[in-house]
Length: 452
Ligand code: PMP
Image 1 (cartoon, protein in one colour):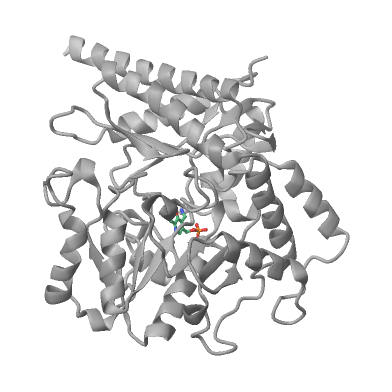
Image 2 (tube, helix red, strand yellow):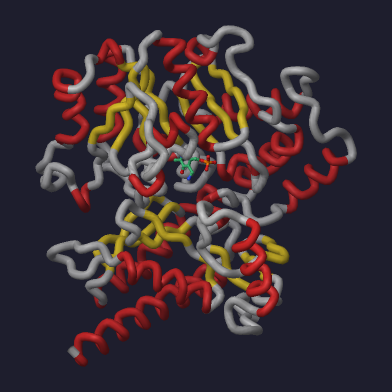
């Protein structure tokens, strides 16, 4: 039986009624990607309040690598609910927080002694990583990258690149410096890999002469694969060069793995693909198996730099989130979800390359494991971003039983963050909808041209 079942037009009557209530009660600031309201979910699908079923290629923006209501996560939560819900780890500690810290310390691709501290959201773990790096180095500045996304709080919004997230919210935090990322499809230097010799990474030395002195820099923060920026995975030399430069000047290298971590790319952490050891790693999204949780893991010496009482948050490392995270990590490890992520990436790549061969709309197919995407352009020469077409593709998808999300500074990237528990049959079904959506958009464009 097919997973995708649509019983009503989208949005159905119950969703329509909720949309009206949403508009009256909720400000316009928060995103609205699809006009349907959820009733329940399981594995890789969502059912809406009108009884329509959707395959989920968005995973709540990458928070469900272990699947919706993963059985181990659900069981751990039910058990914990019968014990205690909140105590505040700083007031009355509990074991699950420690067990999870030990687990992340063991998993993190950092040698030597490691420590982990928990908070609630991706932005909060990035905020804290910066605090820790500043306390350790006693330096103020942070270097970040073009097209980066690190959050919406004051410091993390300042580290975030895309101006849409910043309009109207100035002033921003000081001592933040931005440099180009290794976005080879749209190289900031107009060079081509590999003849470019990875100029973008070496350019840091120039930044230290022209923009900020290296002895003022506490940290360089980078997403190992750009998330909101459009699933760009730099060439293999990029991070080793950046890390070497950090080492030379005593700068803390922070890998922001909020989106790319916890199995998304076929390894527990995306930075493992580059054979580089970060000093600090930030995690969130899929860490909590669907519950809010975030962490900073790093070299013990750096993690211990802030004084006692210097770090904390009331709900940080909530017992429910910690037991859910332990169960989500067990699911990823025991159910082979790292290998599954790699297989999903290959399956997508094959299909997307066949689309790219026949349709010029697909400018680039890229990603790392199950963190995969395609960048849509109006033509291959100018690479003019096909933003309205990408939006239309997303709409076609939810109208045909598939939840997707887009990305990119130019809003022209269709990204996949499928729960890694998805079956091949379900995944292919979702890809069929994407293909039908692309064909629909191309046909519409051709009709416009022939009538012109
Ligand atoms: N860092 C990265 C790499 C992210 O992708 C995100 C969220 N998209 C964040 C930080 C912020 O996470 P949150 O929305 O949980 O604050």
